[in-house]
Image 1: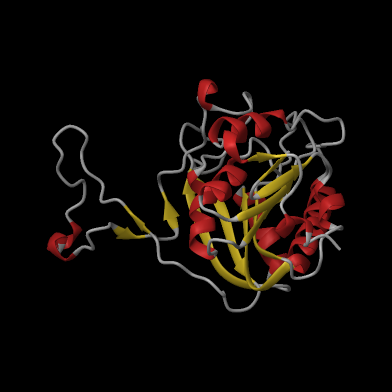
Image 2: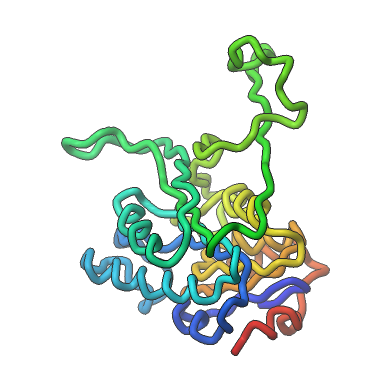
Length: 267
């Protein structure tokens, strides 16, 4: 499927990544399978690997992602803490660490002799110093009943920026989309669009190229299209949810082939 700004291909991400030029993409946003045995709609999409095999596979697509990043480009990886610290250690040898962003995880349950799990990890690395960094802000939270501020801000409420609070490395408005009627792929914990959109706005400018190797329900593609970024991605399973999502949101932007900007990044 193609639009005025991007294209998604039904193929293995390693196959797509191998076809792209070095230093051709401004931002990679990846939400890979978590190796939890889920069904992603394709016999080739294994999600039940041994730990060593899973990490070796992750290192393969991460290496390719590093290769295609432009100097100053950004890489975001959404994962479980169980895997994220391994992936961060690997990326430390290739890119510059920026942040481990914690995203709140709600509606979960304690597992054995462990602490109650309460966050997902979002790794943020760049290829050298970031070429783009936009300081984002989040709304000042108000009580839905009385309308008053939820926090007192230490008596400095009057000094807050009128557009909100500066974004921190803890995001508490990003719980997984668990409502069947609002999901592109029922049965999968689909990302809220705010997550990739926030990463895209933080680290890119309009006209930059964003890549998502695990297209899923198309959250990243929707965010990139809506913010005037070019985008490219792959999905090993059924791409119809992506097609339906983009067609519903941007019906006038659908095209028969990828835009020239995207075609030029292929080797």
